[in-house]
Length: 435
Ligand code: SF4
Image (tube, rainbow, N blue to C red):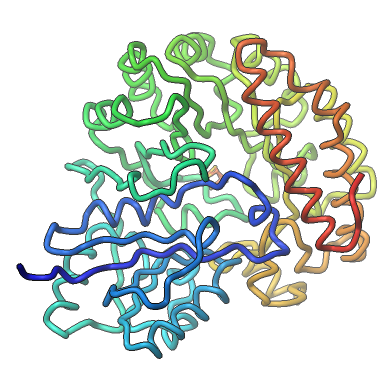
């Protein structure tokens, strides 16, 4: 029997200074699992998420495909170098190497910049013929075609928040200053065929599904149709949307009726001048509280995402943020420090202003200050930011926020306890201790 060549798909470990590295349950790398799904049968496939298991450098895989996000870049390069020294062929892709392909090139045999889906078969074909090119540049793929089922079966069980993540569309026209989605996925919303998405959604193995789209409601007509088709799916689900959803009662009702229990919403800032600067003019800070209540009244909890350290933030931002999250009883939240990721407008502006303090990618974890803020010393911003998170993840704060939605309160308590534990561990590594 002919032995099939093997590909190892690899997701590197988060650095110890990153909050995400301290979560007990991880989030699956859907992009890598999708590439594994695209791989023809003539290859064997292996998957290692270094956050849940150790890398077997003695693997018999001949090709190693590594997905690289900015805070994981150093570890990815270290792994790439080691595998290449062992005679393996290494391919790197993902958002960081798409923005900085020349930086990644010395650590890989080939770098794929952009969405890899369409190029993957060509890359494998070139590899099998010994004609791998050092660089592949992808153009945005046409989503309106057959999609492979992501290889969620490769995920180690019991290690993930849910194995069931799925994507309906890519792209975003808003091009917010701090965000790399538009640079990577383009300005146009591109959708998978809805029927195919719904079929895959219904076949997913877990009772809770997370739809990873950056804005599920980018096309209202598609959204209405989707919610109609999900009515009989009998699953709870969550996704990302803009706060504008609160202004559409009919859509909210439909979402709630088909199992939506959690929405990730980027509020970013409570200061309208910051929102203006970011290009998030469609969020009206003064209306946030009413809109949040409206969504919660439909039985849908909110994971609110915020950024502190923006140019118009002053010392009051920490108290305001604290009061807002407790006052609106946000079920869960994620507060990041402003981070100038490579390829973003923010990084370019800060570079021009000479405000980037370091390019140590493992510190680009959204919880470490890597730039000069306008109204704080960096160490003061860091200290107040850590303190804000520590107080908002106190047990009394969790109890105050988590019990509002009876049916799903267990889910939000678990999420909050996960965040609390990750924050405690992170602060311990920073030597700040925890309460
Ligand atoms: S932050 Fe959200 S709305 Fe803004 S560009 Fe990124 S994905 Fe689009």
